[in-house]
Length: 514
Image 1 (cartoon, rainbow, N blue to C red):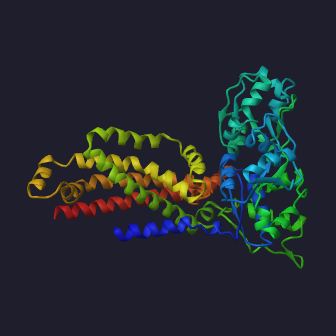
Image 2 (cartoon, helix red, strand yellow):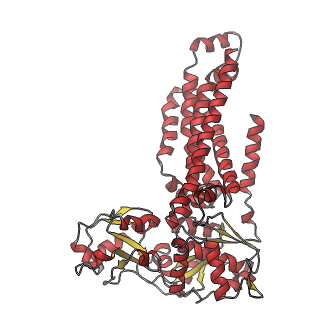
Protein backbone atom coordinates (compact mmCIF):
# COMPACT_ATOMS: atom_id res chain seq x y z
CA UNK A 1 0.00 0.00 0.00
CA UNK A 2 2.88 2.34 0.80
CA UNK A 3 4.45 1.70 -2.61
CA UNK A 4 1.12 2.41 -4.29
CA UNK A 5 0.80 5.70 -2.41
CA UNK A 6 4.31 6.76 -3.41
CA UNK A 7 3.60 5.83 -7.03
CA UNK A 8 0.41 7.89 -7.09
CA UNK A 9 2.23 10.85 -5.54
CA UNK A 10 4.93 10.57 -8.22
CA UNK A 11 2.27 10.48 -10.95
CA UNK A 12 0.61 13.50 -9.34
CA UNK A 13 3.89 15.37 -9.55
CA UNK A 14 4.05 14.55 -13.26
CA UNK A 15 0.56 15.94 -13.67
CA UNK A 16 1.61 19.17 -12.00
CA UNK A 17 4.63 19.45 -14.29
CA UNK A 18 2.46 19.98 -17.34
CA UNK A 19 4.67 20.07 -20.43
CA UNK A 20 2.31 22.59 -21.96
CA UNK A 21 3.37 25.11 -19.32
CA UNK A 22 6.91 25.30 -20.65
CA UNK A 23 8.03 28.77 -21.66
CA UNK A 24 8.76 27.72 -25.26
CA UNK A 25 5.16 26.68 -26.03
CA UNK A 26 2.55 29.26 -27.02
CA UNK A 27 -0.73 28.32 -25.36
CA UNK A 28 -4.05 29.19 -26.98
CA UNK A 29 -7.29 28.98 -25.02
CA UNK A 30 -10.92 28.74 -26.09
CA UNK A 31 -14.35 28.78 -24.51
CA UNK A 32 -16.85 25.93 -24.51
CA UNK A 33 -18.79 26.58 -27.72
CA UNK A 34 -18.21 25.58 -31.33
CA UNK A 35 -16.98 28.88 -32.75
CA UNK A 36 -14.44 29.37 -29.98
CA UNK A 37 -13.10 25.83 -30.48
CA UNK A 38 -12.62 26.52 -34.21
CA UNK A 39 -11.00 29.93 -33.76
CA UNK A 40 -8.71 28.45 -31.13
CA UNK A 41 -7.61 25.80 -33.62
CA UNK A 42 -7.00 28.44 -36.32
CA UNK A 43 -4.83 30.42 -33.93
CA UNK A 44 -2.95 27.32 -32.76
CA UNK A 45 -2.21 26.01 -36.24
CA UNK A 46 -1.22 29.45 -37.49
CA UNK A 47 1.12 30.03 -34.54
CA UNK A 48 2.56 26.53 -35.02
CA UNK A 49 4.10 27.59 -38.34
CA UNK A 50 6.54 29.65 -36.28
CA UNK A 51 7.06 27.34 -33.30
CA UNK A 52 5.38 24.94 -30.86
CA UNK A 53 1.80 25.82 -29.92
CA UNK A 54 -0.87 24.10 -27.87
CA UNK A 55 -4.64 24.52 -27.83
CA UNK A 56 -6.25 24.26 -24.37
CA UNK A 57 -9.78 23.97 -25.59
CA UNK A 58 -13.19 24.27 -23.99
CA UNK A 59 -12.01 25.87 -20.73
CA UNK A 60 -15.47 27.14 -19.80
CA UNK A 61 -17.09 30.55 -19.61
CA UNK A 62 -15.51 34.00 -19.75
CA UNK A 63 -14.52 34.07 -16.07
CA UNK A 64 -12.55 30.81 -16.28
CA UNK A 65 -10.77 31.62 -19.56
CA UNK A 66 -9.92 35.13 -18.34
CA UNK A 67 -8.50 33.70 -15.10
CA UNK A 68 -6.36 31.32 -17.16
CA UNK A 69 -5.09 34.23 -19.26
CA UNK A 70 -4.25 36.45 -16.29
CA UNK A 71 -2.49 33.62 -14.45
CA UNK A 72 -0.35 32.76 -17.48
CA UNK A 73 -1.84 29.32 -18.11
CA UNK A 74 -2.73 30.52 -21.60
CA UNK A 75 -1.26 33.34 -23.69
CA UNK A 76 -4.14 34.31 -26.00
CA UNK A 77 -7.73 33.41 -26.80
CA UNK A 78 -10.47 34.64 -29.18
CA UNK A 79 -12.90 37.09 -27.57
CA UNK A 80 -15.50 39.67 -28.60
CA UNK A 81 -15.39 43.43 -28.08
CA UNK A 82 -18.79 43.56 -26.43
CA UNK A 83 -17.76 40.90 -23.92
CA UNK A 84 -14.48 42.67 -23.14
CA UNK A 85 -16.22 46.02 -22.73
CA UNK A 86 -19.22 45.04 -20.63
CA UNK A 87 -18.38 41.68 -19.07
CA UNK A 88 -14.64 41.96 -18.38
CA UNK A 89 -14.11 45.70 -17.91
CA UNK A 90 -17.62 46.25 -16.52
CA UNK A 91 -18.13 49.46 -18.50
CA UNK A 92 -21.77 50.60 -18.25
CA UNK A 93 -21.66 51.96 -21.82
CA UNK A 94 -19.75 50.80 -24.92
CA UNK A 95 -16.26 52.29 -25.30
CA UNK A 96 -13.71 52.46 -28.13
CA UNK A 97 -11.06 49.83 -28.67
CA UNK A 98 -8.36 52.33 -27.64
CA UNK A 99 -10.17 52.93 -24.35
CA UNK A 100 -10.35 49.16 -23.84
CA UNK A 101 -6.60 48.84 -24.45
CA UNK A 102 -5.89 51.52 -21.86
CA UNK A 103 -8.14 49.78 -19.30
CA UNK A 104 -6.64 46.34 -19.99
CA UNK A 105 -3.00 47.45 -19.76
CA UNK A 106 -2.86 47.52 -15.93
CA UNK A 107 -4.06 43.92 -16.01
CA UNK A 108 -1.16 42.95 -18.26
CA UNK A 109 -3.56 42.28 -21.15
CA UNK A 110 -4.12 43.68 -24.61
CA UNK A 111 -6.65 43.44 -27.42
CA UNK A 112 -5.67 43.26 -31.09
CA UNK A 113 -6.12 41.50 -34.46
CA UNK A 114 -9.80 42.05 -35.39
CA UNK A 115 -10.59 38.85 -37.25
CA UNK A 116 -13.10 40.39 -39.67
CA UNK A 117 -16.55 39.40 -38.44
CA UNK A 118 -18.99 40.21 -35.67
CA UNK A 119 -20.83 37.56 -33.71
CA UNK A 120 -23.42 39.29 -31.60
CA UNK A 121 -26.02 38.00 -29.17
CA UNK A 122 -29.64 37.87 -30.26
CA UNK A 123 -32.88 36.09 -29.31
CA UNK A 124 -34.57 33.71 -31.72
CA UNK A 125 -37.79 31.73 -32.01
CA UNK A 126 -39.07 28.98 -34.24
CA UNK A 127 -39.73 30.31 -37.73
CA UNK A 128 -43.48 29.69 -37.66
CA UNK A 129 -43.88 31.33 -34.26
CA UNK A 130 -41.76 34.34 -35.18
CA UNK A 131 -43.71 34.66 -38.40
CA UNK A 132 -46.67 35.79 -36.34
CA UNK A 133 -47.04 39.53 -37.12
CA UNK A 134 -47.19 40.11 -33.37
CA UNK A 135 -43.72 38.64 -32.72
CA UNK A 136 -41.00 40.17 -34.85
CA UNK A 137 -39.09 42.37 -32.42
CA UNK A 138 -37.71 41.96 -28.93
CA UNK A 139 -40.17 44.55 -27.66
CA UNK A 140 -43.02 42.27 -28.80
CA UNK A 141 -41.99 39.73 -26.15
CA UNK A 142 -43.18 42.09 -23.41
CA UNK A 143 -46.79 41.34 -24.45
CA UNK A 144 -46.29 37.54 -24.29
CA UNK A 145 -45.58 36.50 -20.68
CA UNK A 146 -46.78 32.98 -21.59
CA UNK A 147 -43.69 32.26 -23.72
CA UNK A 148 -41.13 29.83 -22.29
CA UNK A 149 -37.65 31.34 -22.40
CA UNK A 150 -34.56 29.10 -22.16
CA UNK A 151 -31.16 30.80 -22.04
CA UNK A 152 -27.56 29.75 -21.70
CA UNK A 153 -26.22 30.02 -18.16
CA UNK A 154 -23.60 32.58 -19.15
CA UNK A 155 -26.18 34.82 -20.87
CA UNK A 156 -28.34 34.66 -17.74
CA UNK A 157 -25.55 36.13 -15.63
CA UNK A 158 -23.76 38.47 -18.04
CA UNK A 159 -23.85 42.23 -17.60
CA UNK A 160 -24.88 42.47 -21.26
CA UNK A 161 -27.22 39.48 -20.99
CA UNK A 162 -30.70 38.78 -19.68
CA UNK A 163 -30.84 41.09 -16.62
CA UNK A 164 -30.16 44.25 -18.64
CA UNK A 165 -32.20 43.03 -21.60
CA UNK A 166 -35.23 42.35 -19.41
CA UNK A 167 -34.96 45.82 -17.87
CA UNK A 168 -34.56 47.56 -21.24
CA UNK A 169 -37.57 45.84 -22.81
CA UNK A 170 -39.66 45.24 -19.69
CA UNK A 171 -39.77 41.50 -20.26
CA UNK A 172 -41.97 39.59 -17.77
CA UNK A 173 -40.78 36.03 -18.50
CA UNK A 174 -38.79 33.99 -16.00
CA UNK A 175 -36.13 32.15 -18.05
CA UNK A 176 -34.72 28.72 -17.32
CA UNK A 177 -31.02 27.96 -17.72
CA UNK A 178 -29.72 25.34 -20.14
CA UNK A 179 -26.53 24.62 -22.03
CA UNK A 180 -26.20 26.47 -25.32
CA UNK A 181 -25.43 23.24 -27.15
CA UNK A 182 -28.88 21.76 -26.46
CA UNK A 183 -30.95 24.95 -26.74
CA UNK A 184 -31.76 24.45 -30.44
CA UNK A 185 -33.04 20.94 -29.86
CA UNK A 186 -35.17 22.16 -26.95
CA UNK A 187 -36.55 24.88 -29.22
CA UNK A 188 -37.36 22.39 -31.99
CA UNK A 189 -39.10 20.07 -29.51
CA UNK A 190 -41.18 22.99 -28.18
CA UNK A 191 -39.77 22.67 -24.68
CA UNK A 192 -38.89 26.36 -24.93
CA UNK A 193 -40.10 29.14 -27.23
CA UNK A 194 -37.23 31.65 -27.11
CA UNK A 195 -33.48 31.24 -26.68
CA UNK A 196 -30.29 33.28 -26.99
CA UNK A 197 -28.20 32.65 -30.09
CA UNK A 198 -24.99 33.86 -31.66
CA UNK A 199 -25.48 35.58 -35.02
CA UNK A 200 -22.97 33.24 -36.71
CA UNK A 201 -24.61 30.03 -35.46
CA UNK A 202 -25.06 27.57 -38.32
CA UNK A 203 -28.16 26.07 -36.74
CA UNK A 204 -30.18 29.26 -37.29
CA UNK A 205 -30.56 28.15 -40.90
CA UNK A 206 -30.82 24.45 -40.10
CA UNK A 207 -33.80 24.93 -37.77
CA UNK A 208 -35.37 27.71 -39.79
CA UNK A 209 -35.28 30.18 -36.92
CA UNK A 210 -36.11 33.84 -37.06
CA UNK A 211 -33.90 36.27 -35.20
CA UNK A 212 -35.92 38.91 -33.36
CA UNK A 213 -35.04 42.50 -34.15
CA UNK A 214 -33.21 44.39 -31.41
CA UNK A 215 -35.40 47.45 -31.98
CA UNK A 216 -34.16 49.33 -28.87
CA UNK A 217 -30.50 48.61 -29.79
CA UNK A 218 -29.60 46.90 -26.54
CA UNK A 219 -26.81 44.61 -27.73
CA UNK A 220 -23.37 46.13 -28.45
CA UNK A 221 -21.17 45.02 -31.35
CA UNK A 222 -19.31 41.78 -30.81
CA UNK A 223 -16.42 42.05 -33.26
CA UNK A 224 -14.14 39.01 -32.91
CA UNK A 225 -10.66 39.95 -31.68
CA UNK A 226 -7.79 38.42 -29.76
CA UNK A 227 -7.34 39.02 -26.03
CA UNK A 228 -3.71 38.34 -25.16
CA UNK A 229 -0.99 38.78 -22.55
CA UNK A 230 1.11 41.86 -23.22
CA UNK A 231 4.32 39.82 -23.01
CA UNK A 232 3.21 37.51 -25.85
CA UNK A 233 4.71 39.55 -28.75
CA UNK A 234 8.05 39.68 -26.93
CA UNK A 235 8.12 35.99 -26.02
CA UNK A 236 6.87 34.68 -29.38
CA UNK A 237 7.61 37.37 -31.98
CA UNK A 238 7.45 35.07 -35.01
CA UNK A 239 4.21 33.40 -33.89
CA UNK A 240 2.68 36.80 -33.12
CA UNK A 241 3.52 38.01 -36.64
CA UNK A 242 1.91 34.91 -38.10
CA UNK A 243 -1.22 35.39 -35.97
CA UNK A 244 -1.34 39.08 -36.94
CA UNK A 245 -1.71 38.04 -40.58
CA UNK A 246 -5.21 36.75 -39.70
CA UNK A 247 -6.48 40.30 -39.22
CA UNK A 248 -9.63 40.88 -41.25
CA UNK A 249 -9.38 37.48 -42.97
CA UNK A 250 -12.42 35.68 -41.54
CA UNK A 251 -15.79 36.83 -42.90
CA UNK A 252 -19.13 36.22 -41.21
CA UNK A 253 -20.14 33.82 -44.01
CA UNK A 254 -16.88 31.90 -43.63
CA UNK A 255 -17.43 31.61 -39.88
CA UNK A 256 -20.99 30.39 -40.37
CA UNK A 257 -19.67 27.82 -42.86
CA UNK A 258 -17.04 26.57 -40.41
CA UNK A 259 -19.61 26.33 -37.61
CA UNK A 260 -21.85 24.34 -39.97
CA UNK A 261 -18.98 22.00 -40.86
CA UNK A 262 -18.60 21.15 -37.16
CA UNK A 263 -22.23 21.06 -36.06
CA UNK A 264 -23.95 19.75 -39.20
CA UNK A 265 -21.32 17.85 -41.19
CA UNK A 266 -19.43 16.38 -38.24
CA UNK A 267 -15.91 17.57 -39.15
CA UNK A 268 -13.39 17.94 -36.36
CA UNK A 269 -12.35 21.38 -35.18
CA UNK A 270 -8.74 20.74 -36.18
CA UNK A 271 -9.69 19.63 -39.70
CA UNK A 272 -11.96 22.64 -40.22
CA UNK A 273 -9.22 25.03 -39.12
CA UNK A 274 -6.63 23.28 -41.27
CA UNK A 275 -8.85 23.51 -44.35
CA UNK A 276 -9.64 27.21 -43.83
CA UNK A 277 -5.97 28.09 -43.27
CA UNK A 278 -4.90 26.26 -46.43
CA UNK A 279 -7.58 27.94 -48.57
CA UNK A 280 -7.37 31.49 -47.23
CA UNK A 281 -3.78 32.01 -46.12
CA UNK A 282 -1.71 29.48 -48.06
CA UNK A 283 -0.27 28.23 -44.79
CA UNK A 284 -0.36 24.46 -44.58
CA UNK A 285 0.36 23.75 -48.27
CA UNK A 286 3.62 22.65 -49.83
CA UNK A 287 3.66 22.21 -53.61
CA UNK A 288 -0.10 22.44 -53.57
CA UNK A 289 -0.52 19.64 -51.04
CA UNK A 290 -1.97 20.21 -47.54
CA UNK A 291 0.48 19.84 -44.65
CA UNK A 292 -0.48 19.96 -40.97
CA UNK A 293 1.72 22.24 -38.84
CA UNK A 294 4.05 19.95 -36.93
CA UNK A 295 4.25 22.27 -33.94
CA UNK A 296 0.51 22.27 -33.21
CA UNK A 297 -0.86 20.22 -30.33
CA UNK A 298 -4.49 20.05 -29.36
CA UNK A 299 -6.33 18.37 -26.55
CA UNK A 300 -8.17 15.16 -27.56
CA UNK A 301 -11.30 15.67 -29.61
CA UNK A 302 -13.52 13.42 -31.68
CA UNK A 303 -14.88 13.42 -35.19
CA UNK A 304 -18.63 13.22 -35.15
CA UNK A 305 -19.06 11.06 -38.20
CA UNK A 306 -17.27 8.18 -36.44
CA UNK A 307 -19.48 5.58 -34.80
CA UNK A 308 -19.99 5.40 -31.05
CA UNK A 309 -17.45 2.57 -30.69
CA UNK A 310 -14.76 4.51 -32.55
CA UNK A 311 -15.47 7.65 -30.55
CA UNK A 312 -15.32 5.74 -27.28
CA UNK A 313 -12.13 3.76 -27.75
CA UNK A 314 -10.37 5.90 -30.36
CA UNK A 315 -9.27 9.52 -30.50
CA UNK A 316 -6.87 9.47 -27.57
CA UNK A 317 -8.72 7.02 -25.33
CA UNK A 318 -5.54 5.84 -23.58
CA UNK A 319 -4.45 9.41 -22.80
CA UNK A 320 -7.86 10.39 -21.46
CA UNK A 321 -8.10 7.20 -19.38
CA UNK A 322 -4.65 7.84 -17.87
CA UNK A 323 -5.53 11.44 -17.02
CA UNK A 324 -8.86 10.43 -15.49
CA UNK A 325 -7.42 7.56 -13.46
CA UNK A 326 -4.53 9.60 -12.11
CA UNK A 327 -6.86 12.44 -11.12
CA UNK A 328 -9.06 10.00 -9.20
CA UNK A 329 -6.17 8.16 -7.51
CA UNK A 330 -4.38 11.36 -6.52
CA UNK A 331 -7.56 13.01 -5.24
CA UNK A 332 -8.57 9.99 -3.13
CA UNK A 333 -5.05 9.58 -1.76
CA UNK A 334 -4.96 13.24 -0.76
CA UNK A 335 -8.46 12.83 0.66
CA UNK A 336 -7.26 9.93 2.81
CA UNK A 337 -4.22 11.86 4.00
CA UNK A 338 -6.53 14.66 5.16
CA UNK A 339 -9.74 12.75 5.93
CA UNK A 340 -8.45 9.91 8.13
CA UNK A 341 -6.72 12.27 10.63
CA UNK A 342 -9.82 14.47 10.67
CA UNK A 343 -11.98 11.41 11.30
CA UNK A 344 -9.70 10.36 14.16
CA UNK A 345 -9.91 13.87 15.60
CA UNK A 346 -13.73 13.79 15.38
CA UNK A 347 -13.84 10.40 17.15
CA UNK A 348 -11.40 11.27 19.94
CA UNK A 349 -12.57 14.83 20.66
CA UNK A 350 -16.38 14.81 21.07
CA UNK A 351 -16.69 18.60 21.27
CA UNK A 352 -15.12 18.93 17.78
CA UNK A 353 -17.03 16.03 16.23
CA UNK A 354 -20.00 17.95 14.83
CA UNK A 355 -17.80 20.83 13.68
CA UNK A 356 -15.52 18.54 11.66
CA UNK A 357 -18.40 16.57 10.13
CA UNK A 358 -20.33 19.76 9.36
CA UNK A 359 -17.37 21.33 7.56
CA UNK A 360 -16.79 18.18 5.51
CA UNK A 361 -20.49 18.03 4.67
CA UNK A 362 -20.58 21.71 3.71
CA UNK A 363 -17.97 21.12 1.02
CA UNK A 364 -20.29 18.57 -0.57
CA UNK A 365 -23.01 21.19 -1.00
CA UNK A 366 -20.90 23.57 -3.11
CA UNK A 367 -21.62 23.01 -6.84
CA UNK A 368 -18.56 21.65 -8.61
CA UNK A 369 -18.22 24.36 -11.25
CA UNK A 370 -18.77 27.06 -8.65
CA UNK A 371 -16.00 25.56 -6.50
CA UNK A 372 -13.67 25.50 -9.50
CA UNK A 373 -14.49 29.13 -10.31
CA UNK A 374 -13.56 30.05 -6.73
CA UNK A 375 -10.36 27.99 -6.69
CA UNK A 376 -8.93 29.34 -9.97
CA UNK A 377 -8.30 32.91 -8.74
CA UNK A 378 -7.28 31.63 -5.29
CA UNK A 379 -4.67 29.25 -6.70
CA UNK A 380 -3.77 31.48 -9.63
CA UNK A 381 -3.97 28.73 -12.23
CA UNK A 382 -6.21 26.33 -14.11
CA UNK A 383 -5.76 22.65 -14.86
CA UNK A 384 -4.72 19.85 -12.55
CA UNK A 385 -4.11 21.72 -9.30
CA UNK A 386 -7.58 23.27 -8.80
CA UNK A 387 -9.18 20.10 -10.14
CA UNK A 388 -7.37 17.99 -7.53
CA UNK A 389 -8.25 20.39 -4.72
CA UNK A 390 -11.92 20.25 -5.71
CA UNK A 391 -11.96 16.45 -6.05
CA UNK A 392 -10.17 16.06 -2.72
CA UNK A 393 -12.77 18.31 -1.06
CA UNK A 394 -15.60 16.15 -2.42
CA UNK A 395 -13.86 12.96 -1.25
CA UNK A 396 -13.48 14.15 2.34
CA UNK A 397 -16.98 13.57 3.73
CA UNK A 398 -17.28 9.76 3.31
CA UNK A 399 -13.69 9.25 4.49
CA UNK A 400 -14.04 11.50 7.55
CA UNK A 401 -17.47 10.15 8.47
CA UNK A 402 -16.55 6.47 8.12
CA UNK A 403 -13.27 6.90 10.00
CA UNK A 404 -15.11 8.52 12.88
CA UNK A 405 -17.91 5.92 12.81
CA UNK A 406 -15.49 2.99 12.61
CA UNK A 407 -13.52 4.16 15.65
CA UNK A 408 -16.66 4.83 17.67
CA UNK A 409 -17.83 1.27 16.98
CA UNK A 410 -14.71 -0.27 18.55
CA UNK A 411 -15.80 -1.75 21.92
CA UNK A 412 -14.60 0.36 24.85
CA UNK A 413 -13.49 -2.82 26.61
CA UNK A 414 -10.86 -3.55 23.97
CA UNK A 415 -9.47 -0.05 24.29
CA UNK A 416 -9.35 -0.38 28.06
CA UNK A 417 -7.64 -3.78 27.80
CA UNK A 418 -4.99 -2.37 25.46
CA UNK A 419 -4.23 0.42 27.90
CA UNK A 420 -4.14 -2.04 30.79
CA UNK A 421 -1.49 -4.07 28.95
CA UNK A 422 0.77 -1.02 29.00
CA UNK A 423 0.12 0.43 25.56
CA UNK A 424 0.06 4.19 25.22
CA UNK A 425 -3.04 5.89 23.86
CA UNK A 426 -1.33 6.36 20.47
CA UNK A 427 -0.18 2.73 20.41
CA UNK A 428 -3.68 1.48 21.25
CA UNK A 429 -5.08 3.63 18.42
CA UNK A 430 -2.57 2.36 15.85
CA UNK A 431 -2.42 -1.32 16.80
CA UNK A 432 -5.95 -2.03 18.05
CA UNK A 433 -8.58 0.55 17.15
CA UNK A 434 -7.62 1.46 13.59
CA UNK A 435 -7.20 -2.20 12.47
CA UNK A 436 -10.64 -3.00 13.92
CA UNK A 437 -12.15 0.07 12.24
CA UNK A 438 -10.40 -0.66 8.92
CA UNK A 439 -13.42 -2.29 7.16
CA UNK A 440 -15.61 0.72 7.89
CA UNK A 441 -12.86 3.15 6.85
CA UNK A 442 -12.28 1.18 3.66
CA UNK A 443 -15.99 1.41 2.86
CA UNK A 444 -15.71 5.19 3.11
CA UNK A 445 -12.67 5.22 0.81
CA UNK A 446 -14.62 3.07 -1.66
CA UNK A 447 -17.53 5.51 -1.66
CA UNK A 448 -15.16 8.45 -2.12
CA UNK A 449 -13.37 6.74 -5.01
CA UNK A 450 -16.54 5.80 -6.89
CA UNK A 451 -17.87 9.34 -6.43
CA UNK A 452 -14.57 10.81 -7.64
CA UNK A 453 -14.70 8.81 -10.87
CA UNK A 454 -17.87 10.65 -11.83
CA UNK A 455 -16.92 14.01 -10.37
CA UNK A 456 -13.55 13.97 -12.17
CA UNK A 457 -15.35 14.72 -15.45
CA UNK A 458 -15.54 18.36 -14.31
CA UNK A 459 -11.76 18.57 -14.63
CA UNK A 460 -12.10 19.01 -18.39
CA UNK A 461 -13.92 22.32 -17.87
CA UNK A 462 -10.64 23.86 -16.66
CA UNK A 463 -8.21 22.00 -18.90
CA UNK A 464 -7.21 19.11 -16.64
CA UNK A 465 -8.20 16.38 -19.12
CA UNK A 466 -9.97 13.10 -18.50
CA UNK A 467 -13.15 11.68 -20.02
CA UNK A 468 -14.86 15.01 -19.42
CA UNK A 469 -13.04 16.29 -22.55
CA UNK A 470 -15.48 14.33 -24.68
CA UNK A 471 -18.45 15.43 -22.62
CA UNK A 472 -17.59 19.12 -23.07
CA UNK A 473 -17.12 18.61 -26.82
CA UNK A 474 -20.42 16.73 -27.04
CA UNK A 475 -22.21 19.55 -25.22
CA UNK A 476 -20.72 22.14 -27.56
CA UNK A 477 -21.81 20.21 -30.65
CA UNK A 478 -25.03 18.73 -29.22
CA UNK A 479 -23.55 15.35 -30.15
CA UNK A 480 -25.09 12.55 -28.09
CA UNK A 481 -22.55 9.98 -29.29
CA UNK A 482 -19.69 12.16 -28.12
CA UNK A 483 -21.39 12.64 -24.75
CA UNK A 484 -21.75 8.87 -24.41
CA UNK A 485 -18.13 8.39 -25.48
CA UNK A 486 -17.16 10.27 -22.33
CA UNK A 487 -19.89 9.03 -20.02
CA UNK A 488 -19.62 5.30 -20.81
CA UNK A 489 -15.89 4.91 -19.95
CA UNK A 490 -16.43 6.89 -16.75
CA UNK A 491 -19.33 4.60 -15.79
CA UNK A 492 -17.28 1.47 -16.61
CA UNK A 493 -14.39 2.80 -14.53
CA UNK A 494 -16.78 3.37 -11.61
CA UNK A 495 -18.04 -0.23 -11.88
CA UNK A 496 -14.49 -1.59 -12.04
CA UNK A 497 -13.56 0.50 -9.02
CA UNK A 498 -16.54 -0.81 -7.08
CA UNK A 499 -15.65 -4.40 -8.00
CA UNK A 500 -12.01 -3.90 -7.05
CA UNK A 501 -12.86 -2.59 -3.60
CA UNK A 502 -15.33 -5.41 -2.99
CA UNK A 503 -12.60 -7.91 -3.85
CA UNK A 504 -10.25 -6.24 -1.36
CA UNK A 505 -12.98 -6.29 1.30
CA UNK A 506 -13.52 -10.03 0.76
CA UNK A 507 -9.78 -10.72 1.03
CA UNK A 508 -9.60 -8.75 4.28
CA UNK A 509 -12.61 -10.63 5.65
CA UNK A 510 -10.96 -13.97 4.81
CA UNK A 511 -7.76 -12.93 6.56
CA UNK A 512 -9.67 -11.91 9.69
CA UNK A 513 -11.55 -15.22 9.78
CA UNK A 514 -8.35 -17.29 9.83
